Amino acid sequence: MSQSVATGIAPVQSVARGRRSSLTRSRIRAAWTFIAPTVIVLALIAGWPLARTIWFSFTDASLNNLNDYEFIGFENYLASYGGEWFGLLTDPDWWHAVWNTVWFALVSVSIETVLGTVVALILNAAFPGRGIMRAVILIPWAIPTVVSAKMWNWMLHDQFGVINDMLLNLGLIAAPITWTANPDTALWTVVMVDVWKTTPFMALLILAALQMLPGDIYEAARVDGVHPVKVFFRVTLPLIRPALLVAVIFRALDALRVFDLIYVLTANSRDTMSMSVYARQQLVDFQEVGVGSAASTLIFLIIALLVVITMVAGRVRFGEEAR
Image (cartoon, one colour):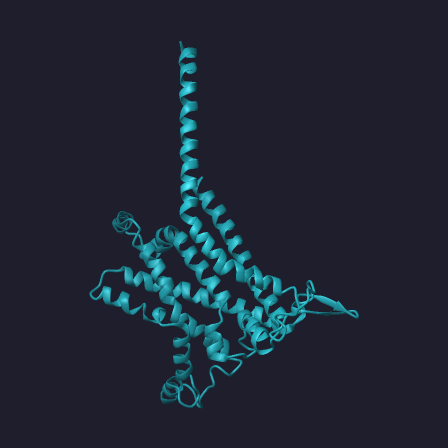
């Protein structure tokens, strides 16, 4: 009897699997149909310029000979002539720009994450005027970066800036400080302006995660008399960690390719030069399209590698938690 039942069930299971696989293939075809136009547009808008940039990085092209250049292989990256090494990877200015960029990304994103979490926790609480505060807090993020950088550039001016005037009146400094020209303060000034502008972005993402949390957990914690600080580290932080990770990734990728903020505040200063500013200097000021393209290609590879590592690490971590 059991054998006959099993024999009858097997064809049914086979038909069900066939229907599921057919449905899966149909869904995959539909998905590709919907995203194909986007993929084509991205390939034309982003893929073609990226391919041209990578190609130019293997040539001796300059702004004077864009139609007459030669393929030189990896010489823009690294080459040896007469026992000496030349190329982008031997340029101390490039490595200084890499260090500036990494330092800027680590410091600014860390501060923004902490402040963004604090702001999100405050905005998540119930108090009069909360809606207005949520709108006001987004103003720095809504201002275009070039506009906010220029505004802060005037505020930080050593002769006419309001920052120096306030500090002088308070007796905190004895003489005006050239915030964006002094090597000791220039990079910290850029970080300060970036924190002012992009902390609302972090707060917005974290606030969205906080509002998705179930309230009964906190009600149970209050009944049990658990301290709010302990509730934050034991309950809130683990629950918002996926959203927090996404926010950090977005900000880190944006910080690694920072250009406009640094260029408006400090121009081509070596003390604050980022990788993007270095690439722009090679492309425009020195008219070395090959070297500038090589720098741009390395920026792309660094950011792409960071994305892959982060995605793999996040997938492994969340996969382990799911099991």
